[in-house]
Structures are given as C-alpha cells and as structure tokens.
Image (tube, rainbow, N blue to C red; front, top):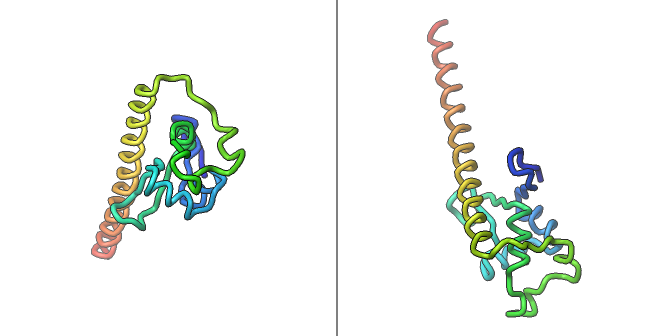
Length: 133
C-alpha cells in the first residue's frame, strides 16, 4: 500500500491489499470483480496480470453496489460502515471515476514503458563501454 503524491489517495497494489482493505478474502474480491465489476485495474492484458485500485474507487463502489442481489455477496457486518458516503451527483462521480481510471492506467503503462526503455539504454551503455576498451 502507498499514498499517491497527487491525489493523496491510498493505492492498493495487490489482491491481498484490496481484500484486506475491504475486510474480505482474496477469492471474494476476485469474485466481486467478475460478478459485480469491482474497480480494479490490471497492468497487463492477462488474467494473471498484477492488479491495483485506489481506496477512493473502492469506497465509491461499496457505496453504490447492490449487495441485495445475492446473500453470498453481502459484505461482512461493519466492513462498509466506515466507508464515507458521497454527496456528489452520481453521474458526476461516475465521470470523475472514469477519469481517474484512465489516468491511473496511463501512469501504470508509462511507468512500465519507461522502465523497459531504461533497461535498453543501460544495455546500450554497457555495449558502448565494452567497445571502447
């Protein structure tokens, strides 16, 4: 877990951190992603790609999801009691949340791309040093 510098929002970097934050098990939150569209983002394309989410996204999702559809999906008593309720209009909240998702995805992709480019640059520097000897 870490705090984002810009938004001051808690970033959860794994299924375990997300599950702990929501007070549930990993398999439960993975099921919530599949069945109730829990807002998690993946750094890659596959099912086993690393995941992340923000506390703000999870809080908003918990305040809007309909757990009444299935008793087995209901949160544990007190798990969502401490989550803040939003007074912002629903559509505006959804639009802002969509923007946050897009920005977080762009940041994650750029970070991976920059790391890869740094590795390539480092390899080229080593090649140039070896040629100079």
